[in-house]
Amino acid sequence: MYIIAGLGNPGSEYKWTRHNVGFEVISKLAFDYNIDMGKSKYKAIIGDGRINGKKVLLVKPLTYMNLSGESIIQIMNFYKEETQNLIVVCDDINLPVGNIRIRKKGSDGGQKGLRSIIEVLGSEDFPRVRVGVGSKPAGWDLKNFVLSRFTEEENDGIIKGITDAGDSVVSIVEGKILDAMNMYNKKNKG
Image 1 (tube, rainbow, N blue to C red):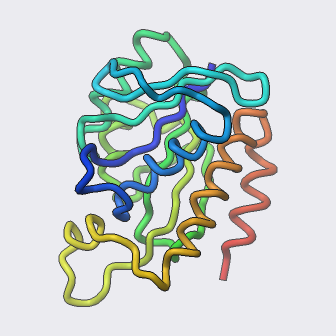
Image 2 (spheres, helix red, strand yellow):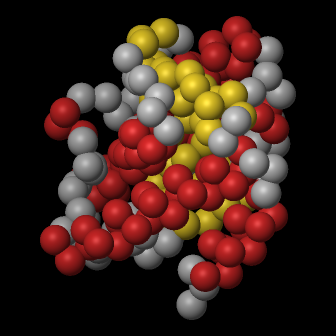
């Protein structure tokens, strides 16, 4: 089974903020594959189902971004899954709005939700899909920037990024992570 966790912050005040693109990708996957996200368990909203025949658990941690690991460790321990079967989707301020970057494993790159997960798992060995939310403008506080909403000019880009991120997660579930990396990581260069 794949555990697919989209990172974000709970509460309507955070909906469609830059920090919540992980939640939006999970919502899109739930819609596309008719997965009910109605259960609250493991400090998360979860939904189990199938993506192209593969069993998945969709997860939106409710612990707030910086403590995402608290939820993920409970889920990983309960299901006894290998870290390689965890896919994490999160925002990235180092990518232009809507660009995505896929990695098989690696550091947190400054993303505190990823940092929390790496710390509790004691491993960097899980795939992640980062969705670009743009760089912090000069003079902005980072916290205020990641909690801000996308501008009207950015909407098309972020919707495409959420779609691409969802498609790349499907590729990973199908065992095609290298194909996804070749398609999206190359496409987004420049």
